Length: 108
Image (tube, rainbow, N blue to C red):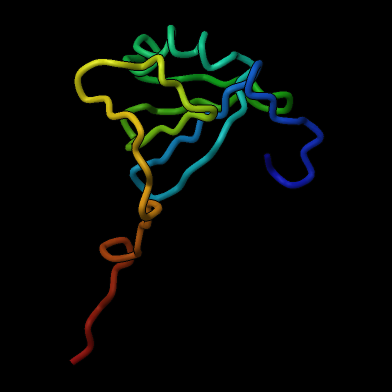
């Protein structure tokens, strides 16, 4: 939960969704839907071109074509099938360097 937030994360009634964008940025939203219910909606959500989140002070629209990775908390082991792996441990966190992001001009 961000600093200064008065809301408390409750994994029984809330799911945190973190979007990792192709430009290296990320943002997390707390959605008032239990992860069990969100899993049922996930296939339809991932097929949308845009997702819209109505916050207290603004509306945020996310272009799903720009999303490279999605993280859900708490975990959703209900997602099963081909391409799903269980009992996995993360060895290193995702690290994005600036290689290729900054235009560097070589001087001779």
